[in-house]
Image (tube, rainbow, N blue to C red):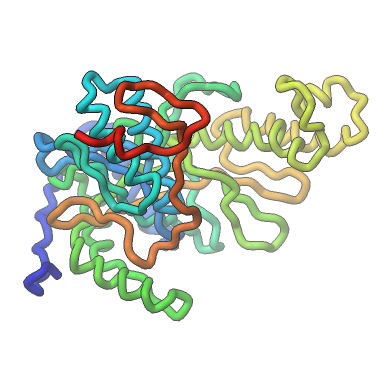
Length: 368
């Protein structure tokens, strides 16, 4: 409801019929998934989107909508604005304006900050996933994006989740996207496992932000040992291959270091594969199991492997963002903040000088 007690009207959904073969195949994959999977809600995710005075209804995602806590998104925004003030500001006035926003983010929990005609807003999305009849997470679809040549190197520069994403509530969508958007408009948390304030905020959001935008699919690693339920084993990735590469690194490099099988002091080039090749390590059999599982992962577009009694699957994550008259929904009062705001960088003065050893932004650096 708005301040007059009137629920905002929903926006019309513009539907376009896929005509290109690739688009038609993507739509067919979506239909198959909708026919066989039920949906499970995983919880909120947070990022930051910005809009200038000339952008109309469109917002640009600045911080990927992948954080589990609104403060993490604010911290990312604080860093981006600090570095923008340090490296990109062309005038003292511009730098002071940026540092004013940084100062607010160092000590408070604003839902949005404004800098010289641009609004930066913490935005909230709901993450959910398709589940098969056995409770397993939906794997990547055949038409999900894959690189032409897979890159398995640990240090690689690939676009992240939501890179370059523009949120446009008036963009046309396919028939199945439209059906999903309309079906999810009424979505709200239900059940006794949610606190009362969470239920109230969720129900209120259906009225204040009645529209839904679907964000691009993301991909994650889930794992299960024995008869346990599937659990998420890492963050979100932009493509199925990025998730596979993360699993490959976890199996052969990071995991052995976390368990102490490979010492933390070992060189960066040392992993399960190199140790197995040498053939002299005390835990050779354990590392061979991990290396062989990782090799199976590299054999093609493999989405599930098993190692040491644990099954690992590449899973498909879906996200929706609620939209109201003023744009994308921001954090709700009941959303949990796991960390407190703090200054993340040394003091930067209005002249662009970094004062190492001094923390936080001072009033004289933001005064105009």
